[in-house]
Length: 332
Image (cartoon, rainbow, N blue to C red):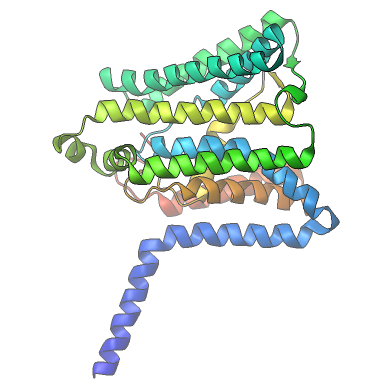
């Protein structure tokens, strides 16, 4: 009798473990599958593809790491793509106007200040006007869309560029090493603030139960603003990293980043409702899975339209599986 009881308890504990970690298991399983396919179909171009994946995923990883603070509250920012486009254009304009390393420094500092300002606006105005954060981010999206078009029209061209030698090392291996260092540094910083400071504790608390968090004496308005400003820092850094690779920007720069960030976080196991199950690893796992999936399908010879269809299908399936919170599907 005791043997059967022990077996039943082990089975129940195993099922309980699976139920508790099902999103994590699915996320890491997806990453493992895409990595295996990457190794199988990489062939002789494996090294080149690996460098491409690193350079392609770097800005998305950095921006997604900042988005963790916002998504952990159950919120989102749909203006991030347009912000990236405007930041890249502004940096190029300042660099071309000032020139040299000084231009790069001034360009990045200007963009960083603007990103912090936008983050504060997005967090504060939504609270003060009692609006969902997506409403204020929609306002910023339309504002930055117009700003992007006006900036490009002022140049009289469809795109502007800056020598990549001003932005990154000329040697490819050194450039890749710099990208790794930046990703590791941002990851360590995001992990520290999210796991070991009040910022991460309170943003998760807001996502889990904002009313209870406020009644516990937490100034939720203040921490919402700080969370969006932290996101802004990562958007500024991600914009610069993107510019390191391309060296150019135009009217379409940044398009699709908002949806890509959402998909990456969901693929990484981030619950759309936020809360205590939110984690920094979702940004890393999800982004690598997403970029590797695109690379795998391309090397397998899948048509571009079919690649987008497969991504959309995977996104819908994950949404249906993970969105079980009453009162809404998408973040606030």
